[in-house]
Amino acid sequence: MRNSRRFNSPKKVIPPAGGTEKSALEIARELKQAASRPDPYREQSLRIHGLLCAKCGREFEEKDRQLLTVHHKDGNHRNNPSDGSNWENLCIYCHEDEHSRGLLADYLHKKQDE
Image 1 (cartoon, helix red, strand yellow):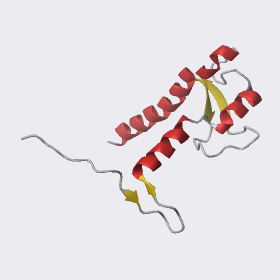
Image 2 (cartoon, one colour; image 1 turned 45 degrees about the horizontal axis):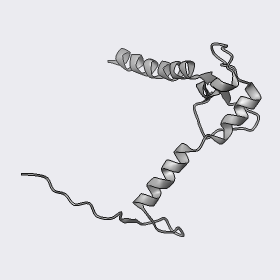
Image 3 (cartoon, helix red, strand yellow; image 1 turned 120 degrees about the horizontal axis):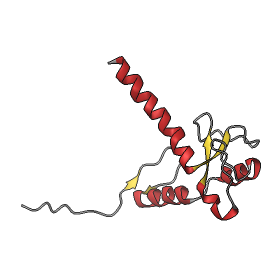
Image 4 (spheres, helix red, strand yellow; image 1 turned 135 degrees about the vertical axis):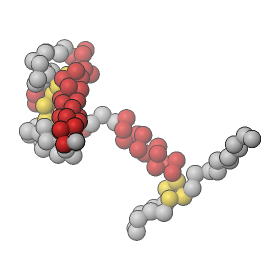
């Protein structure tokens, strides 16, 4: 027998006190738009620290600037001081390596505890 679920129009979400009601579709659209916007601190970090990877030292040209990412030293992406003290520009390869080191350390620590 075939599963024939019907999808209704988006339900209204009950907002917190004092808020306005939004459909799930409206909320999803807002989240998607927020995710597609560039980070407001990225350009500031590139201007402060230059087009240089802080880990491997590779210099980037303007045409390759999309290969540089902003890494938050303390791991908190909401901690964005205007002086750039919590940021370092990392190429995509070094940024991936930086985050995978933490995952590997967590994995090895759990294995050790077993």
